[in-house]
Image 1 (cartoon, rainbow, N blue to C red):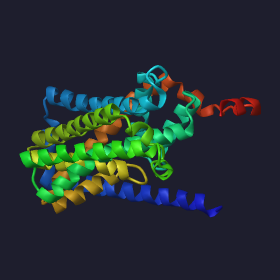
Image 2 (cartoon, rainbow, N blue to C red; image 1 turned 135 degrees about the horizontal axis):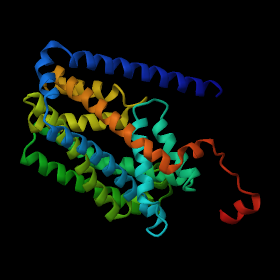
Image 3 (tube, rainbow, N blue to C red; image 1 turned 90 degrees about the vertical axis):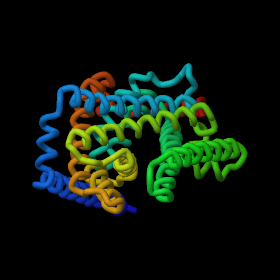
Image 4 (cartoon, helix red, strand yellow; image 1 turned 90 degrees about the horizontal axis):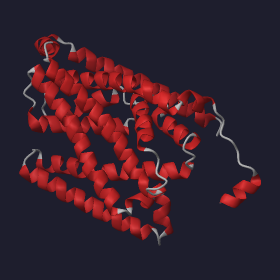
Length: 323
């Protein structure tokens, strides 16, 4: 048992090192002579294009923050819900930390919500499990439709919409069933407390579609300015894959998103050097923007005080009275 923390630490270090290697590899491909003209186009981007690009980044960060806030409401109730801008501040910092290993992004969310907002750890686990399940309800139909149809058209859109509706309906039914079946409550990590609310589930799905859509627009904008003929199908593939790789990255998003997206793009027949340029630019600008937003967010949350603060243990009589 004593060796397990060391093993986990070593795996995180190794994973992060691999991620750095993948990012450097992607950057090497992005800076190849074949992309010289595209890089020149990007440097000459108009002020309006630059403003639009960074506006889309900020919109993604704010929308993600709102999705987190929206999804937690069934756990706390509208009257005792966390303040919206507090959740936004936490999300901005977490977005920056997500590129780093050791699950610092998740750890920071737990730290703030437990020490500042007095949430229980089990409550946060239920919240995050619901976020994962509802996000999967959107991404899995999109991935399945892409694998089966291998094109983006009206049929693809219909298949995705129907798939999302079926996933949400099944999830709500299972969540309602969890109130009577103990094993479902256990394996859901408490997500059923959120996913049993159809308004929350539907709202999350709609917001997540917009979220991935904004990322896709960013991809399309970079490709357009650079002079790449990526097309809407390619932009959706790159944007969706980039998003998914960021979620499943085990040791920080750095390198994992670039490497995974380049791999999928190569299988789809896209030019890997172009995808390398797009993904490294996405990572660099998003990291820079989230870092800038993180500074006032950390001050708003008084993060320096929370890090140095020890969780106060309740007296036995208080604990007995509250549980």
